[in-house]
Image 1: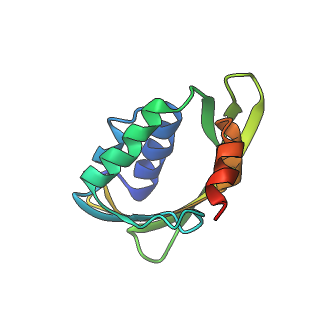
Image 2: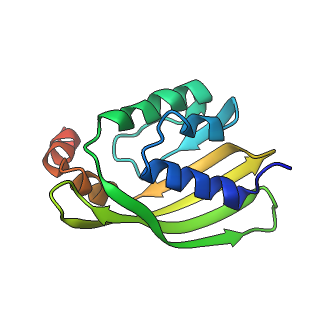
Length: 142
């Protein structure tokens, strides 16, 4: 039996927290649509597992973080393929500073694979946790 949308979501957020970058693309269908609507860089959607493989491989170059998903609430919807998950990544930076990054993911999972995802992430908190807030602000300048 294929994993439920809730199970796939939990595998995703724990995989990110544990840095299992090579495994994460396998949670997605070959053809998918992953969007980050709050990204200030106007990133287009990722539509294939290979695009996601490239996206997740960037995680290998990030500074190591001690983090885990916390305050997880998963809302079931009338559509059995769709969940809304509210959570935060919480942890400490390499220098020991605590952080939290609030997120909401809207996932559509079919046959145990993510076929669509809209990931609403606090990009400022995310940049701060990586020690890259200055770079983030500079990237926003015209």
